[in-house]
Image 1 (tube, rainbow, N blue to C red):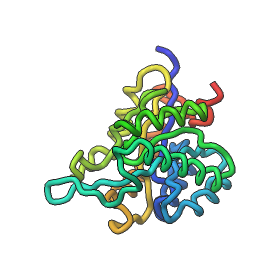
Image 2 (spheres, one colour):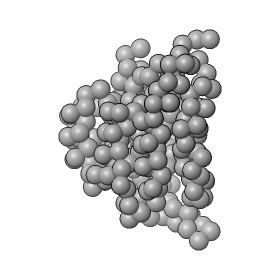
Image 3 (cartoon, rainbow, N blue to C red):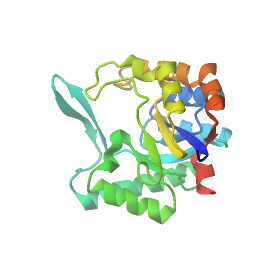
Image 4 (tube, rainbow, N blue to C red):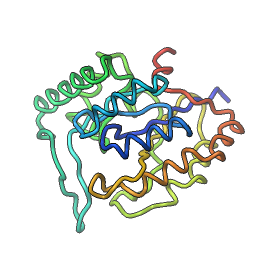
Amino acid sequence: MAGRFLIVNADDLGLSEAVNAGIVAAHERGIVTSASLMVLQPAATAAAALADRHPALAVGLHLDLGQWDYEEGEWRAAYERCPADDPGAVERECRAQLDAFRGLLGRDPTHLDSHQHAHMSEPTASIAARLAAELGVPLRGRDLRHEGGFYGQSGRGAPHPEGISVERLVELIESLPGGWTEIGCHPGTGVTEEESSYASERQREVEALCDRRVRAALGRAGVELRSFAELARQ
């Protein structure tokens, strides 16, 4: 089998101080190697300072065009940054967030992805691909395999605790194909439901990501941890 290289990327850096703390914990004590920054969220400036103190943590841009929550049997917009079907507005918003990233960190992102996978649908898909090409960085789901199976809710927001168990993470690691894979995660410590509809699950993710059995599984399977910064140097 070809070498197996794993990037563990934490989404939502900057969402809140509690999310920032969980990501740092999962990086320092666990297997998180990269994170994606939401530049318009309340703790983005604090996240940039944390990134400066943790140079091994690769930081990408988490394009934040809106959020939709499943409530009372339907999807409802919690907020929208711009009309999702207006290519011009989407591109202006994406480029403005890239400029904000550069202002906060003083450098370009190591990778691009988006909140709630907004870049998987047009017109954002084409715009995100163009930005990634201009920057010469990977775009989630296009330039390497993305594994989204480590998640603690169903597609409609129902609890799915087995999706973020140690056993689930070990299973994903052991089944990795050859080449590069990104596993997405959403760690946080003490996140409230006011901060995120994905709240208590974040603490359980931290616990799984830091569990010694996960690190042992990487060794047994011969999987090497890497970051998006290291991928860029290949």
